[in-house]
Length: 285
Image (cartoon, rainbow, N blue to C red; front, side, top):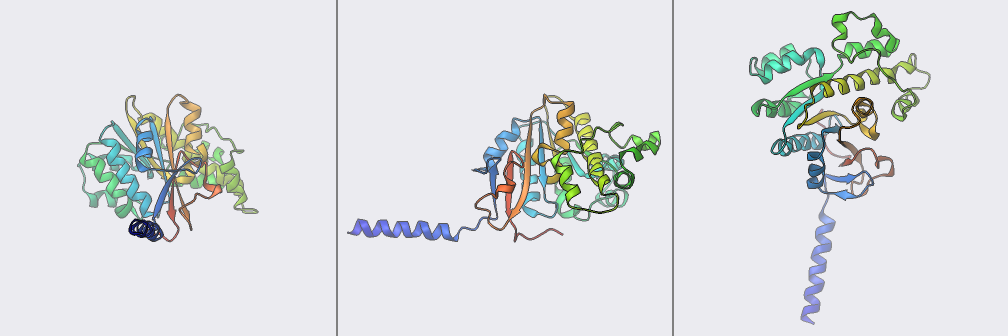
């Protein structure tokens, strides 16, 4: 009888503990099976390119970006790059990494995102402190805006000096990619709506170009970008595969759900690993 009571007590404690657990996030594989951070790290280490797709205002994603950076750099020759830095600000970024300018000078000379200090400065400073290359990969926003108004052909009007900030022309573009099609569906009847996916494409193509330009054999390139730029093997990944199908990549996506204990069907397959964050998580901006 005593053993039976002890067993009931033990079961009660387990159930109570599980009921009290409220994870802020859960990591899943593409099929929607829960996996550990260790598994995501191991797969990332085996890749040539790792794409960390974030939700820009999500603190869990930013924390995991830094943790993954630290863990990958411990055993790999790491190169870092990010959508959050545009190509015409790469010189300022390199000056900061080389300790030729201060944080204040970087802030005043480069177009940093509003959440740079909280979300991206830790990544840049880690690279700076550990001599890890970190490159700007994104197209200058003014050229993406030009495409959103006049399509990819508008880039033909740029000078040779301006074209050095973007991927080589002409830009390969597949308008039938589901991600670009979805963008069209989100803005029915909008003036020049057909050009918005092309503006996305010039960003994707430019980021892919500079990732490959800076990638080195026997190294691992870790790239940070919004999830939409790399999910479902589209965006940047589509352009990478057109040029270097031989490279092994690992994709990570971040999603937000009311219930993180089961991955929603619509989020399965978005990446090799899906970080599912509680939708009530606070935002960084």
